[in-house]
Image 1 (cartoon, helix red, strand yellow):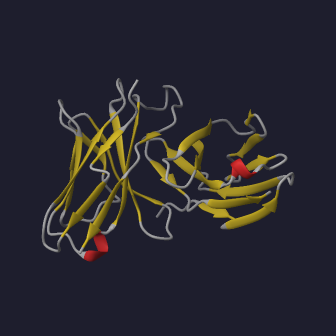
Image 2: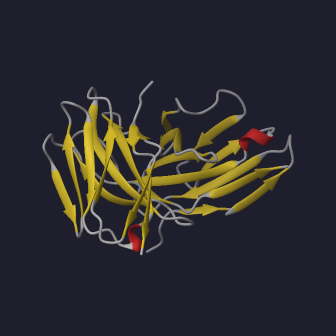
Length: 111
Length: 118
């Protein structure tokens, strides 16, 4: 059974704080690692898709890194804002194209 | 420029009835994924389909659940003889053709169908 683990489960930070969360995944049959942002009452939206060991991607204040050898990825948010409040999901994509999601990290940013 | 369309948004069924959930992928997308979200849980993979083919149905219960993605028309997730435990939000996502040697495309999600079994 393929396991994708995310930690922490939830996180409460103050506006302006920087934060990061972890996604761990199997290192075998790896093809890509996805990050999605899921706001309440909306559908998940893609942030990043990473494939190569050592990949780093950035979109505004959000960035992500990938270590395929040890099977983990970090998502960083610099200077959190209330509008960053959402659940952040990572998903492991195997070589067949299937995507398995973690349970997510729920981020709440207080003004 | 329509995104992934799921309907209905809300579906109420009595125990024992059938539920049919529809998903129209984005234009040009030939791959469809179905996920189930139970209360307090994340997205659980159910099935991955290409046009007219099931690629991976390892997450789908063996009984009562089936999925199809015909050559023409939307993908359908069908739940026969629904039980209360089937109550959940069902999300569909689509992507262009995937594969080891092709682009690393993200999934595009629909807004989900919330199924309530009474």
